Amino acid sequence: MSEPTGSSKVQPSDPDGALSAAEFAGLSQEFAADPHNRLMQNALSKQSITEVALDRSIVTSIDHTVSNQVTDRKVTNQKKSGRCWLFAGLNLLRTGVAGRLGVKDFELSQNHLLYWDKLEKANYFLENIIQTADRDIDDRTVAHVLDTPTEDGGQWNMFVALVLKHGLVPQSVMPETEASSNTHAMNDALARQLRKAARDLRAVVAEGGDAEVLRKTKRSALADAHRLLTMHLGTPPESFFWQWTDDDKAFHRDGDLTPQAFAERYLTVDPSDYVCLVNDPRPTSAYGSTYTVDRLGNVVGGPPVTYLNVEIDQLRRLAMDAIVGGEPVWFGCDTGKMSNSELGIWDAALYDYDGVYGTDSAMSKADRLLLHDSLMTHAMLFVGVDVVDGAPRKWRVENSWGDEKGDKGLFTMNDSWFGEYVLEIAVHRDALTPELQAALESEPAVLPAWDPMGALA
Image (cartoon, rainbow, N blue to C red; front, side, top):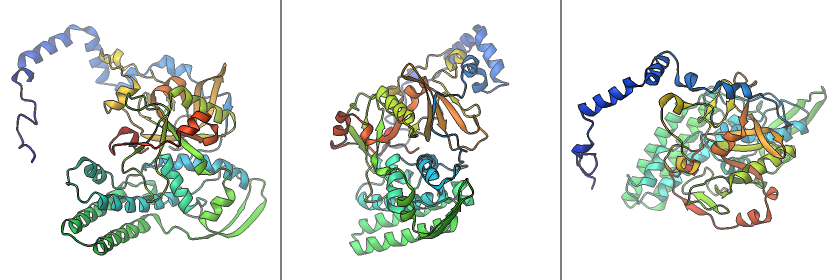
């Protein structure tokens, strides 16, 4: 049983630990005695910390040119949604599809995969609830599942699972809707229905209901999710009539295609040939080992989310080699750290916060992961790299935030930032050394559901 509110076991209660008036007075005197503190107080009363702390010398040293670039097409826009991982995955695939179609700025339907991701996640959530129904409601794993019933985000393996099962369609076949571009209200409604279903499913188990009652209850919940999603996002096509005009004004017609047939015909790469590599430097995460995360996924029975942990230099070398070889690279990162989205730049020292605050906030990448200061928050596509003396100096990034930020939607990442905040890439299996390919076959260690490596981009 939980301790009552106010118990000394659940709240700090040591009298010596209280913030006293005398201690506050001393802190205030120390603050006032330093002219730098008063200067910064004046500055921050009129300007944001990002304006005051921005290192202008770094900003002026960055240009958007690179020695190797895969594409210069128009960027996409996920708008007010958390679909970056889907956009990045589709942007990777559309490179080859657009080439086959002869249409430079062709887009695959992001709404199509969003629909299937939401419905598959609803089903995945309900199955997780059934599997954990015998646990206490405040069990940490159950609480995590209930906290995240239908997030927009995802991982590379989850993207692959959707493409393999549900195929692809051109954006014109299943275009954006208000809810696909602004998912908040739809997500709230869906999450509420799913949590109610979780209550009902747990009640069936608690009351000793048989499997038939349990499945009937789940089927009703899935019907609610399907109805809600189809109203918001539209009906995904079973097939569509495909014809188009290429950039040379030549007309083409393929006739009726299913989404699976379209993917099979026009994809130039097999998504299942890619493997997910991470850089997790925590002492508990050995390099050369594979990992998965408890309860993480979207398609029941689909390929599991599996990572191979490698050193950061291996990660950057594989990414660089792929781009130099003519292929973009899907990656996940902690995008909010040391970044300026308006300018479209990242650098590990872009903001001198310690210079403003008079602090020392330096932490290693491992410490940031351990202390809940960092996790994967965004996925994008590397489309260029600036190579000097065989090593990457900076990276060209295709974001999915529209063309008003950065260099018409393309961002520049100094390599210092790559080492600190890039966490994950997807590359061809055959690009790995024989040792790393062998390591992929090992049984993955299972990280807990709330581990930062299970964060959804």
